Image (cartoon, rainbow, N blue to C red; front, side):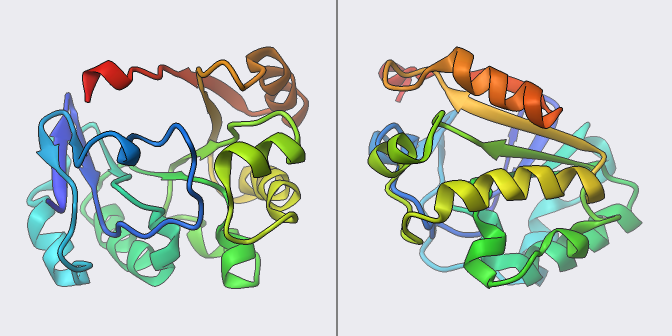
Length: 196
């Protein structure tokens, strides 16, 4: 499924690829969320994504968030987000924050004016733990790149939030302090494997 609605928001599932393998990821537990199967047979084209959206003005927000890391498909996100903004939609991206490292450049200036909000998964209070529980493909520099991505996001995107999943391995209060020091919003996401 490309587009799925939860509450007043529409979520766009544009890839199942991810450059992390987080131990607590819902993908380890289920083929989807909220009754939607999010396993893709192939990655949808820009045209297919736009067709799946319909009228974006009927949603409070359109969110790039599916069963993969949306910013792996940066050009697709930019094109679809540009169309969404032309339609008057509010656009958010949920990301692991490794896109600049993945693409080998600071990609955040490319999102200016296209993305209203970004939610970045912090998910660890230090680099060692991040390596151990998130297993980033991009190696040991991933955590420092993630922190830099959070800092840079504030220059280009109006609303920046970092999140952590409430699992016992993660020191929530230390992560909250990191968010405060970076002057961004902070959210704890529930971990409820029994729901999947």
